[in-house]
Amino acid sequence: MNMKNNTIITISRQFGSGGRQISRILAETMGVKRYDQTVVTMAAKSLGAGDRIEDVISRSYEVPKASLGAISTASFDRVPAYRQLYTEQSKIIRAIAAEGKGAVFLGRCADVILAGQPEVYSFFICADDTFRAKRAQTHYGGMSLDQLNEIEKQRKDYYDFYTGKTWGDPQNYDLVINTSRIPLEKAAELILNYVNFCQGE
Image (tube, rainbow, N blue to C red; front, side):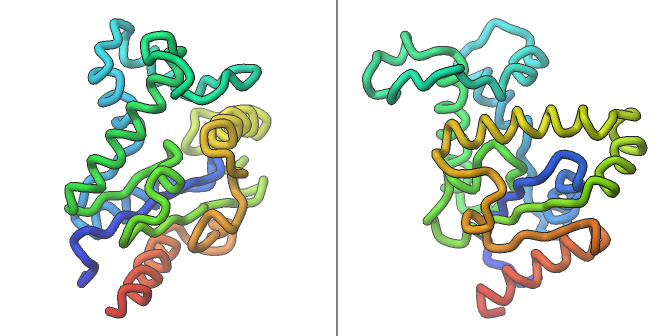
């Protein structure tokens, strides 16, 4: 693997599409760290949150029912906790990327937070309902497709609110990959080949 040392890959995905496993394969192949909910944990610790980390993670996709305006219009201590958490996550993601060691980010709006930075490549993983329903049975404790969609809507609302973009819009990503039609290992290989091609390797 001749990929540049500062290569960053971000993975956004439909819940149940196998995006988490793909991100794990990518990180292992690249020899870099993978960041997902660990970013929430790091942000919570940085903010000195007194709540249990599990509770912070479970609330990490909270958004208000109505926009409260830009953070700059209020002092930081008056900013709702979910906004403070998102802001801190963004700082951590940028700091990790700035280290130049490369990384794989799963979710957390990393594709938008790092947009425009050198050697950042973003991918969206999707799958049809049949694939997702089957995977829900084998990888998500027997959840139903409706349960998957409910969680997915929460993540979509989070992404749309904080980024001002539309989750899943192909224009936000380098490639959109349908794992209903390709094994997860081949999807990871496709991503790596794409990055290598872009880097001229």
